[in-house]
Amino acid sequence: QVRLVESGGGSVQAGGSLRLSCATSGIAFNLHCMGWFRQAPGKEREGIATINSGGATNYADSVKGRFTISADNDKNILYLQLNSLETEDTAMYYCAADRVPAHLQNEYCSSPQGTSEYNYRGQGTQVTVSS
Image (cartoon, rainbow, N blue to C red):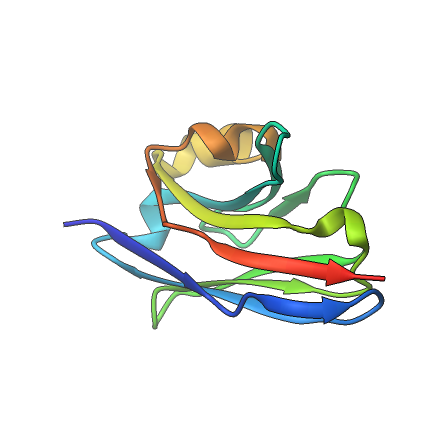
């Protein structure tokens, strides 16, 4: 059974940092594209970061240079480091996974915009950034 559980969200002032974690079960990282997307109230979902089994990462322009996605393949945990947070980053953050053969991951995992359509997702963790 696949399960993704996010944690690490909270309230922080602009300029601060948070580290989100996504504990997974039933997910083989070497057979899945992994990623994060977010959704702010009244806004559409925004895919923000992906990582494939080879460790290649991709980011949305809105977070590039500030957020870092990483994975601990031994512990099956996905991370998202959020630095230089802005009030516009306030949203519910979700981790997501999609099973993709390794030879297709370079192409399929390259677009963060697709993460909100991945087959598996967690319940989300709230990030609130105040000015």
